[in-house]
Length: 168
Image (cartoon, rainbow, N blue to C red; front, side, top):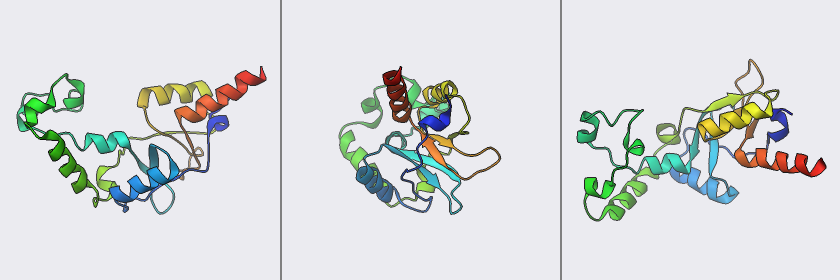
């Protein structure tokens, strides 16, 4: 079985120029948690999901970065820190202010540019491995092409496996 079995071609997407507010409306309208960001040619340039949004709400502190914990391999997400001790009281209000400030920002400034691409003929087991490892959307393109032709998600793989199991 290949990735093509779990791929779906009817997906919602946004452009890099659209805002965070636009993206949130699209996610809510379509009942999805993530979507690809496509340029004018249909090339996948990033993805936007709730995890990206929440990550932008976390405070960045110079002291932590100076101690070497602000690096990609050891940032705030990798440590068991109580952020309330870093940002003081009324953290929910500060978080809401940061959330509001994100709304007019273009997606190109907040999207996750680290996406994973695969091909329709990729074995399904490899698609599962990629999804588990990268925890995001899996874009599908034809070999040698850049235009997004489909998406694979954990849910789409589970649906294929449920159908296959029911047939056997």
